[in-house]
Length: 225
Image (cartoon, rainbow, N blue to C red; front, top):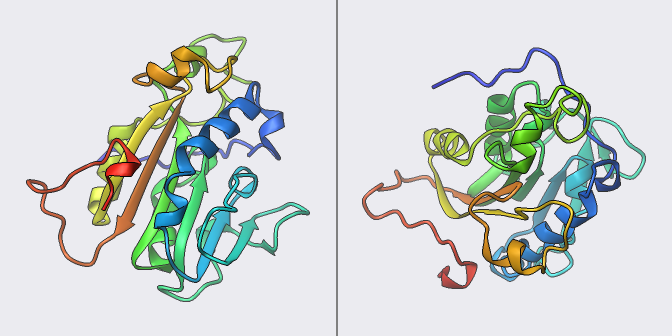
C-alpha cells in the first residue's frame, strides 16, 4: 500500500466560505447526507475539524453531538485529531469532512478514528476528488497554491483500500458537484456525478471479516437496510 504520509501540513480552512464555491460544496454535502441521519443511531456523534462542524446534523437521532479541532473558537473541545482524548470504542459516529485532505498522516488519522469508534460505529468521510475539475486545477501553477487546490486529494479507490484494511463495510460511495460554481440542484450536478468535485464515503466498523463476494455498496441510501 502506497504511503500517504505528508511532509508538510496544508492549513485547514476556518470555514467553507474560505474555499471558492465552498458554500455550494457544503450544501451538496448536506443534501447527500440528509437521508442517512435517521439511519445512524447511538449516543455520541463526533465532528472533527471546522468543516465537519458546519455540516447540518439536526436530522440525526444522536442527541449528544460535539466537535473537536486542533484550534478554533467555536469547537467544544480543543485537541489533536491524531491523539484523541477518548477511550477506545466510545464514539458511535465520526464525521471526517475533508480532514484527510489536510492531514499530515491520513493513515494515522483513520486508525485513531477507528480506535474511538464502537463496533458497528459509523465513519463518514468526504474529500476533494482528484479526477474532477478541482483535480485539473492542481496542474495549473497559479492555482495549486490556493484553496482548495493546495489540499491533498485522494481517489475513492485509495480510500476504499485503507478502509478495507481496517475491516469497514462501505455502504455508500459517491461523487457529486461536478461543476463547482453552479447550484447543487442544477441539472448537470444532479444527474452527472461520475466526476464530481467531492467524494463521499459512508462506512461501518465491522468486527467480523467482510466477505468481498457478498459485500454490497449502496449507491442510493434509500436501498440501505
